Amino acid sequence: MSTEEKSLDNHSGIPVVILCGGKGTRLREETEFRPKPIISVGDRPIIWHIMKTYAHYGFKDFMLCLGYKGEIIRDYFFNYDWNHSDIKLELGSKRVTKLENSHGEEDWRIWLIDTGQETMTGGRLKRLASYIDQTGSDIFLATYGDGVSNVNISDILAFHRSHGKLATVTAVRPASRFGELMIENSLVTHFKEKPQTAEGWINGGYFVLNRKVLDLIEGDNIVFEDQPLKTLSEMGELAVYKHEDFWQCMDTYRELELLNNLYNSGQARWKVW
Figure (cartoon, rainbow, N blue to C red):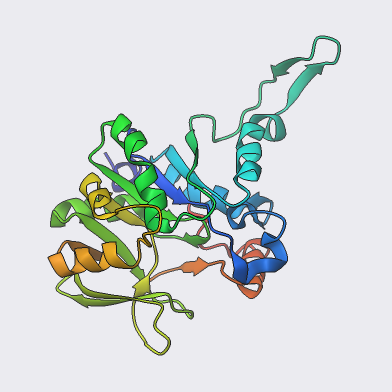
């Protein structure tokens, strides 16, 4: 088996959790009308781009943590076949026949789960515990619904397994800053959320998490990037995978324009599929 074939192994059964419930207040121009993950980059929502990256590496079980305007995300996926396939519709009987063409997402399995309007990121993960247990997997992947990257998901998983820690976070070096990571010997020794003046690696999402991590989350009001990640780093259980290549979030209108300009000019470096 070639290196490329190995990187595209079928990881059926390992769920990918995507946080989709936030209000996206810094992108109010768009999020007043729709949730941030459904905002288009090119001709598809950014969440589709994120899912395509995971699917490229064989991860096709997605659990979407819905909240703010979650019904729009539900509608998008419920109508996905209708909107992305050639069909024949018989008006009298309302019978629908799918024609010969098909799209590349037919084998995706998507959980659309209401995790609350005001629930924090940790609380949203905690609400998925019973669904994650049903998959039979002792680990799951997780990321945010507003950031794209060309990170190799299979490599992150292999890195996580090689270290044997409860959690792995992908560290990136973007222009903007979110959660700052202090790193020593491939372990996070300190986690500081949203520093005002700091240089270096930051939290880029693309987590690999052991099911036991959910035991550190007490309820809906827990921010995952706060106490749970701090506790994991203090325990020496938060490994870090350094990604030095492309990563870009969509937190502001300027960043939305940047992603669209990259996509429309054929420079979408996150498009690995």
